[in-house]
Picture 1 (cartoon, rainbow, N blue to C red):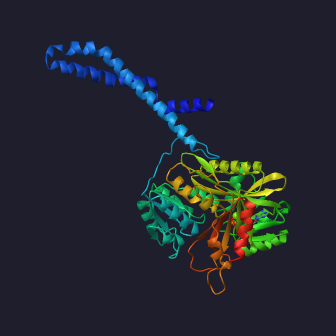
Picture 2 (cartoon, helix red, strand yellow; picture 1 turned 180 degrees about the horizontal axis):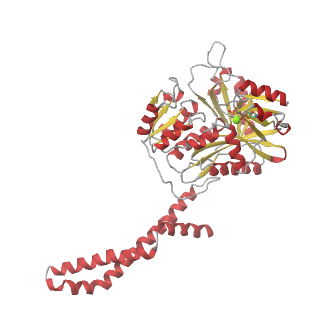
Picture 3 (cartoon, protein in one colour; picture 1 turned 90 degrees about the horizontal axis):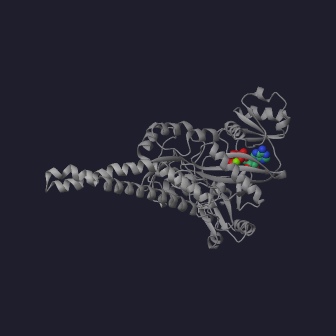
Length: 476
Ligand code: ATP
Ligand code: MG
């Protein structure tokens, strides 16, 4: 009941003040009615115009007032009904506000900075929905170029290419955080709707800014020390040791990380990288999980189910969904991710990586301002994929439903699985399993540690899917 009252109040607010609508009805429609009525009489007898006008006035004003009243009532009823429709589409973690201010519909052209596998899967999602796609990537063999309408094969800060994007694309997004945030601000300054904003990307691309922002949002990270110069390592480091020295920028897949046990090792490690770093306390992890949030310009937010992530050699190996953790931790992780998206005033798809610690504590490891490897299960196991959400968010569409169709395991395919002579793995068993879905990224060269593709295995339970996914890997 309370819900309905709130919805009605909102619909009344949107419909406008009833008094002025009724008054406008009376004056505009009522007086017009009287005028036309009197004018029709005048055709026969000129002197009768004003007396007839005055005689018709009460009836005209009542009719005009009733018409205005009916219009106001219709607007309220329509408003309540559309709120109900939105509620029917409600998904976990959704917070509703007003309708999106900007809606971009197909066949508009969308732009993406970066044409790797994430850009490629975005492009497929956008093309499927009827949009055009322009990809900016300096690599002539960028995977996304296979599907894009336009491939601007230039550097990410090339002003001519950016100007072309600005003049042809209705909105622009990114597939990775290491793109120049200034390029994104440059596009935004030319009126291009950006999702996410250059400011959010600037935070995510620098571990010091990122961890500081997370802490300021009232959320926990591992204890860390910002290290700009050797002098920053002079004090007592016991709160951060044993730890990991991570370069503040350009780290991915565990690159740019050195594990250190003592202050001497930390100093030697910093001397070897010679770039701004964080020294982060090594935490005893029970497991790692991630949450992917979609947030629109209008503030609607939706979470995907939580993924449990296992790494091998610093690279994501498998994602297991739903995560095999207590439901209370699942809900807390989702609430934290939603809170962070809100604090960032984020528009787009945001991935939040967590560490689960002893005593059910949750700390945020890092964020990614884009779809995430641990969200690739959404291509086959949720009603909407993370890439469709990226399209929806940038186009001001309501986020799609994120319900899990079935437990699922995503397993990454690294170049290591390819044969020494460069020949393909044996896909036969994988492709004959009816519940397994192969995704290859179309990369020409299979190098060790390079992400070449992944597959999703849907199963009755997450454990069964995990067992089968691992068994399939043995056959490749
Ligand atoms: P990716 O690109 O895969 O997200 P990355 O290079 O950004 O990786 P991190 O996510 O910071 O690096 O770390 C990679 C992995 O190293 C983590 O997923 C985790 O397994 C481990 N790790 C990182 N920091 C810590 C820590 N403070 N305590 C324990 N393990 C950690
Ligand atoms: Mg990480």
